[in-house]
Length: 60
Image (tube, rainbow, N blue to C red; front, side, top):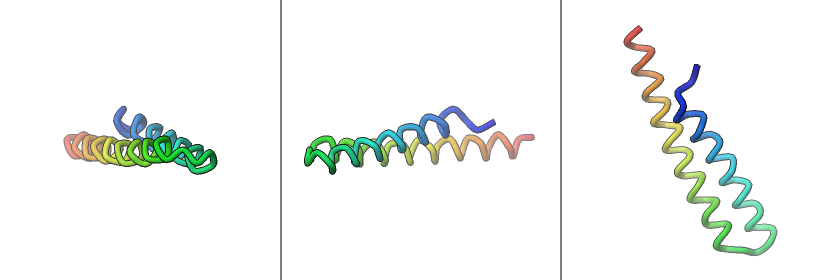
């Protein structure tokens, strides 16, 4: 089972893509920027979860 951070990070990344798209469609630059920031945050969180998964797998 993947680490909780990986799941949350993937969800945050996906939500960020939706926000960016919505901002692009509506011309809302602030929403578009928030979406990009959410994507970066999600990718970092996903990477942290990946490291945790790797460490947990190496212990077993």
